[in-house]
Length: 86
Image 1 (cartoon, rainbow, N blue to C red):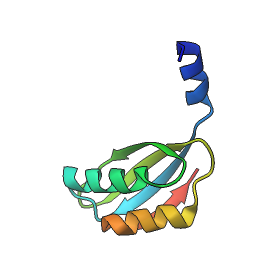
Image 2: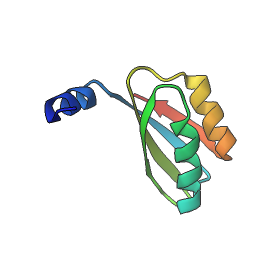
Image 3: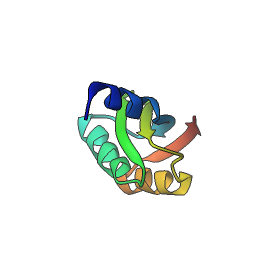
Image 4: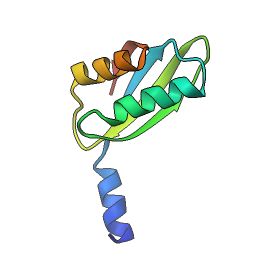
């Protein structure tokens, strides 16, 4: 794949932002990242950890993510979805 193709594919991704409570450490980040990485369409997951507060989770995807699948993945990891924005 050429650099131009990579840039074009990245430009086509949508980033959804979720606020998640209960995350306190690197293990929490790993758990949420792994579960959200299994959601259909998810390409990349990044977490801005706020120990003791509400962390921001950004998921890049090729299209819209199923909100129920996202909530289930976060719940499966053991945390609570607070809000979702796009």
